[in-house]
Length: 170
Image (cartoon, rainbow, N blue to C red):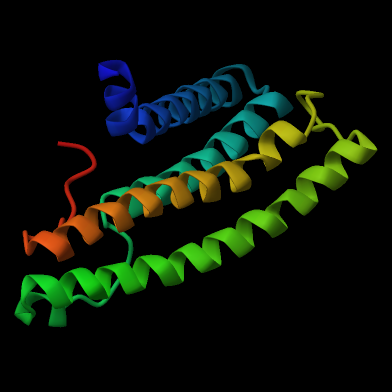
């Protein structure tokens, strides 16, 4: 059970770290290859591109988890805890509706890619693996929104301070 808590707490951090390191190392190698050997590979560009895509979608889920997404929260500083919890829950429900719709429609491109067997130009890997970044991101967002709604509901019922977010990296 403790391992699941650790994974739940740090999953996005670890994924962001992995994709960021992969992006930076591959980009550095490709720059050196291009400048020193006057040669670059097509696979390096693809790894950087797809790492960035995963980085963006996992980062969006991390922002939802830590309440770091863009919002106007000036009024939140002047509200008591219960109305603040209600407003956060309303915002999470609206975001959940959008995320569920987007998750549903994001599987369309994955399905088409799998149906026709499309592969990347350089790596020759199925594009399904890379197109799954969008449904994965929205799936993680939905999971984090469910957790947020539960946390806010508990805050609303008990009158405790609402979770305002935390820093993603210290």
